[in-house]
Structure formats: structure tokens, C-alpha cells
Image (cartoon, rainbow, N blue to C red):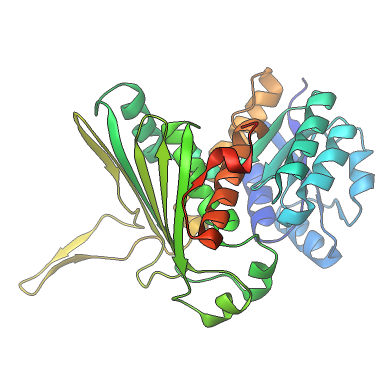
Length: 341
């Protein structure tokens, strides 16, 4: 395929703007050709910030253009499948932010469209592209820590998103924890058998008022007995809390929080350092860039998708199992959610 890969970004909010800027400044084999958003002023502002003149509000006009090879879908979760099916029908390669959708029926419909069209499809679970988590994966694959016995993932945001966003986000498990469900698949595979979730409203009563939760602990048990625990929270006083540990028969491997600097201040009163990165865009900037580079290379070089739709379906399955577990107050077998997984 000709270079550079010509990409249109669909959705000019926070994530869309970030991806557009990364395409322009950090993905040399790709070129940003247009920005589309229902709000023209957002599309224009993003285009201007990225140094291009092409922007608009019409999805169909973009999909009909011969100078657009691929689209990056950065719109709200409830619009993803509709756009995926339209883009696939137009023969465009597709990068889509997580999740594919909030229901398995719509996900499966979108994946069928992608398969029928024969286009490359990648879902944006950026944490897989973080060097520290990739090192954990290598330690597991290489047997450096022996047989994994247990895994612990801690993931807490510095503050909750706006209530308006949370109303349509799919809830904590399908909006926030879904990244950790994907990390569980990345590290331990898809052989999840049972999911148990406990959660509460501890941060903001307004979150509970819309039927959501803001603090949770989830336990996944795998077919071989391995236990994986996830701690989630919508608020962390010291910043973006992102930690993973895998404990095995020969040892353990751990990733702690990342910091803007490595300075440690030692005095007679204390030994301390500055707080971790405060926001996910800062903590995972490199990973966001790498996932777009991987997408671009896969399309141009004819490689498989770095994160296919089938792989990205499983975190939604686990998230739906967690929602049912919380509602029913019991462990949920994965087979209860999707017997075809």
C-alpha cells in the first residue's frame, strides 16, 4: 500500500485531538488528512492545531473520499459500531477507541462487517503498548517468575469524569475497568472462568444517583486456578495510580507508578519524592503513540492487527460478567455471558 497512510480522525474531543496530534508529530508513516466532528467548531480547532485545513461534520463525505485510507474512531462509545460498519463498507481500515460497543450483539455485528470487508481493524487499548507492561508479559512468557499464582492490578483515576459523560459511559466496569480487564487478557490470556465483583459509592453520591459505582474490587479466576484481583477507584488524592504485580513460583515482577521526574528528596525529617503523573494522557503518552504506529505499520506492511476485534471483545464480556456479579451479589461464570467466547 502507498505511503503515507492517510487517516481521518472522527471525533475531535480530548481523545480525538490527542490522536490527531500524535499522527502529525509522532507517526511518520501516516498523514492526517481530515478531522470530523458533529460540532464544527471542535473539528476546526483540532484541524488548525494540527496544521491542516481540512475539517467537517459529515461522516459520509469522508468515507466517500479516495484520499482517505483509514479512519480513527474517537467518538462516544454508543456510536462506534454504526461508524465501524459504515467505514468497513467503504473499504477503510479502522482504528477504534475502546470499547467496540457496550453490547455483544452490536460488537458481533461490527466484527462481521469488518471481516466481510477485509479491512484491518484495531481497538485502542493503549496499555498493551506500554514498555513496562510488555516487560511483565515477557517475564511470564519466558518463565522468569515460574508459574503465575496471582496477579494484582491497581487502577485509580485522580478524579471522576463529568456526570454527563458517566451517564452514557456504560458504567465503571465498561468505561474504566475495561482497561484492566484487557490487561488481564494481555498478561494471562482469555481463559477467565469466573468473575466476582464488589463495589460501592465512596467518592461522589451523584455517581450513585445515576446508578453507577466509583470504587470496586473484582476477582477473576482462570481455568488453571490463577487468581487476578483488580482495585478500581474514581479518585486518588496523590494522582493517577497505576500498578501491576504478578507473583509466581520462582518470584514476582512488579510495575509501580510512573513519575514526571526521578528525584528523591532526603532530609533529616523525611525521604520523599513528587507525586506520580496526574493524568492518563501523560502517563500513557508513549503507549498511545506506539499503538498508532503499530496500526500504521500493520496496514502498510500487510501485518495482522496488533489488537483484533476478537481480542477486544473479551474485556467487554468480562465487564458484563462483573456488572451481573455486582447486581446478583454472586460469582458469575463467563459462560453465562457468552457461550461462544
